[in-house]
Each structure stands twice: as structure tokens, then as C-alpha cells.
Length: 464
Image (cartoon, rainbow, N blue to C red; front, side, top):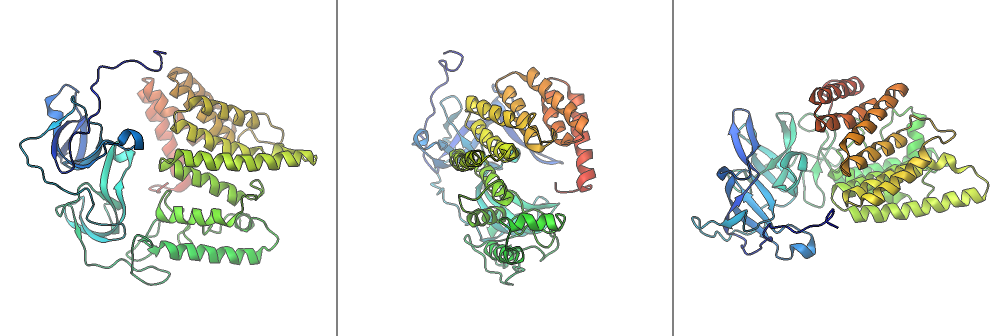
């Protein structure tokens, strides 16, 4: 159908250029450096100012089969994944082929000095390579390195190196900060020393990832001894202490802040937490198991491993549905298990969205909503129901009906205000839709109100 596929006069993607060669590429924006710093400014597609010289770091002739990008190209100030055609890419004959290897000079865990935002040199540890962050670099932006700084620079604990050259990043002879558990400074890719919590100072919070995992396992064994009859001692301990005790698999035991989502500590601790619980564990009575599975699926989704997330969610849904079916056969009222099922379905709908399977996304959300709405014994303000309705609004937007999506979002906001629950989340849902509909003033008002609510919850300047 022409509604879904049609002919194009765009030339095909080419992979004729080799690694180490210079090319001229037509970009959608250009780098501008002024008194406020570095920024990328969009230019008209027919402008002559957006042709930029780049050095090819990777060339993948099998990009269609592997799902990778055809080229990774280093431009001034950034690297980009690039789909080159005869219309937007050509050979640069003014510069010789350098034959530069696509292999990076430094590995994760190595110590480096980096050119800072202020122009000086700062010390840090490489914690990621070929780093991607669409919110900062755009959808195709890649930086060779992400570096954790020993001392935050202008409020930033991490910076990115836009190029793999001595003018930007160089080897350091300064050792890592000391791990607060083992007091060692040895650091490598298999056992990084990182700080991914809210601890401050020159030494506080730096820890080997594996030392942190061992500490969490020790704390868990202590809780098992303290609550020998509990299936979920972590959750029971939080409730018993009025949520005043930190969960060692989620939070720093010193500052009580959650570890950075998707960071090395967060991922390693999540893996360990999931391994504690067997596949047959009752997800409804074991809240720690449920939350760990959903958080792990969200990590997989963030990393682009959508199918892996789906496989895990389908597996857990099958286990939980079997449990519910057995409970029904025993005459147990299973309506009280709906929240668990809804949370799993909401996460699955998100994975369907990322893979553009909107029909499956809609059917999954419809099932979740049918379990959420008007269920006796449930508050109409509980979060899973709101998240289901919010995702249905997003589905409506993705199908192209911005007006209907906005109407649905505003109705959700009114409902949230009437129950005084989840107002901040609904404001953030409405604001961008109002912007797309042309009501910039209401968009700004809603973002400002959401920020005010957040400041009231967490305090001014909070990382939340």
C-alpha cells in the first residue's frame, strides 16, 4: 500500500570509501563556537555551508545484514554514524588518505587527562567507549570516550572526548581514586572504580564495581538471617523501617541516593539481584524480583536490545499467568495480582513501541488497561493505570493524531489533579504535545509547574 511504502528518487547508500580516507559530507547542522560554548546550529538543506570534511573511522559494507551504520566519521568536534549517498557524500581530494586505524588508543578503565570545558586539563578514568547519548549528541552522534572525572568540572562528573587525539585526551600517570571498601587503586575494564551516586568530595563514593556487588550480597545475607520467614527480605526491611533503610542493590549505603540508571553499578547490582530469585518465584509477593526484572528490561531497552527485553518479559508473563491460573483454580481472588501483570505489560508495550510494532503495542496496552480500570479493591490513582493511559496517549501520537493525543493527555491531567496523584508526570506528558500543537505558552507553564512540584519533593538543585 502507498500508505506504507512508495518509490523514492534518493540515490542508494554507498560504501565505496575506505577507512582512513577523507570525505566531504553534507550535514544537517554545523558546529558554532562562541562565548556561550560549543553548539550545533541547523542549516538549510540546500545551503553550501553544511559541507564538512570528515575522516572515516569505520566502513561497514555489510551494514544491511548486521543492522549497523555504513560509516562512522570523525568531524571537527564530534563523530557521527553516517548513511552516505551520492547526494550527501563525496571524496575529499585536497587531503591525503591517513590510513588511520578505527581502533581506539585507550580502553575502558585506563587513566587519562582530558581537555576540560574551561580549557585546562583534568584527570579521570575512561568508563565507556563509542559513547552515544541522543539527548546530547543527536540520534547519530558518537563520542570516542566518556570519562568519569576525579573532581567534578562545572558541576559535571562525566565529560566526553569528541576526538581520539592528544589535543583532546592523553595518557595519565595519576592513579585512580581509592576504593572506599578495599582501599586499592587498581582499576581495569573488568573491575572499574566508579562513583555513580550523590557522594561528594575528593574520595567519598569511589568504589570497585565488584566490591560493591560483594557488599550488597553480604547485606542481603544479613537480612535473610534477620527475617528467616520472609520470601522478600529486602522489601520487608524497607517497610519495617518506614523506607528509611537503603536497598544495597539499588542505593549507596552512605548517601542513600540511587545509583545512576544504566551505569556500571546499577547494571552489575541488577544482574546480581535478579540471579538471587528463581524463575518460579512468586512475582506478586516478591516485589524486589518484579522491580528488578522491569528495571533490567528498561536497561535492555535503553541499550537497544529490544528483542532481548521482549523475550524476558514474555517468559515472566508466562510464569506469572500460570501462577494466576493456579490461584484461580484454588478459589483465590486474583484481582489483587493485577498491578503486577499491568507493570509487566506496560514494559512490554514500551519494547513494542521501540521496534515500531504499534499494533502489538496497542493490544498490550488494551489488556493492561482492562486489568487496571474499575477493578474492585484498587485505587483509581495507582501508578500502573496512569502509566498505561499515558502510553495509550503516546500510541495515539505515534499514529499521527496529535489533537486526539493532546485531548487524552489533558484529560489525564485533570484526573490526576482531582486525585492529587501523579500530577508532575501528567504535566510532562502534556507539555510537549501543547508545544507541537502550537501553544508554546501553555507548554512552558506546564513544564514550570512540573519543575516546581519536583523542587518541592526533592529540594532545589536536586539531581532528580
